Amino acid sequence: MKTAVVTGGAGFLGSHLTDRLLKEGFAVIGVDNFITGNPANVEHLKDNKNYSFIEQDVTKYIDIPGDINFVFHFASPASPIDYLELPIQTLKVGSLGTHNAPGLAKAKGAGFLIASTSECYGDPLVHPQTEEYWGNVNPIGPRGVYDEAKRFAEAMTMAYHRYHKVDTKIVRIFNTYGPRMRLKDGRVVPAFVGQALRNEPITIFGEGTQTRSFCYCSDLIDGIYKLSQSDFHEPVNIGNPVELTIKEFAERIIRITGSSSKLTYLPLPTDDPKQRRPDITRAWQRLGWKPVIDLEKGLTETIAWFKPRV
Image (cartoon, rainbow, N blue to C red; front, side):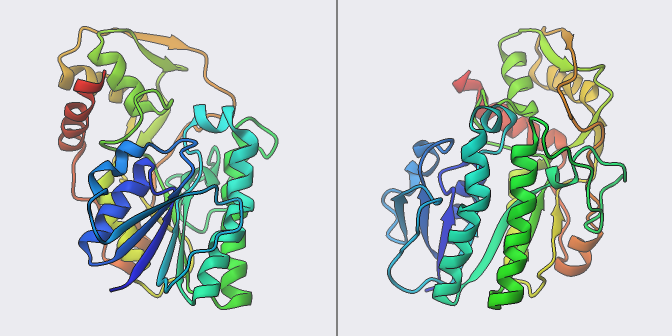
């Protein structure tokens, strides 16, 4: 049986990845310090003989005994509220954590995958965003702690690949949603769904003309798993290319929830991207991957998960 380590294993995506790896026949060791992760996300695995958990900050040296075949580095605050409240921790996990995690892979002769982000593109001047685009990032803006941490993490990953010959992969994750998101994590899906289910005004920043594309978590994890099993080492966008405005997205959530919420508008935050949509040509050509869950189905399942938690 192959063994995988998942840092950030109690997070939204880390826990879904863990479920997929167990389904694929891996033994999984989750690592998390619960800064933003939630023990409830892996509670269902407590009796699984192929799952174990280590509570640890990955910015500290990682020493895990035994054979390890793959390291998935998902540890990081990932929502605007988190990385604005935890700027130093965000920078440390992107830098120190992305020295320790591939270092573990190197020591074990294991593969390594870094969960990077579409935030590497910043407020893009190219649309849709291809992996060849270098981005438009403000390194000293409030979002820079996350954007630059992930850009550094990609550089560190490629250094481990080129210098230490570690079998590395880089996934650039675009907006993803689904069960296990934190209701108050500041991201648009839980924010809008929570407000709609409480029949509160839905808060739109700016005029709502900025665009996003939303990928359901099972689709994203499928792309990440396929990338981990590939022989491709450069960044790969994984996301859903169906694009809509934030205003359209809010109106859709109101319709699906049957909410009486109205829209309210606030000033646009500093450096908030005006457009965000992945070009997934590389994912299709290299991995044979594309999303299959449409927004209506994904939102219906997500809303059903949030309802008893509001």
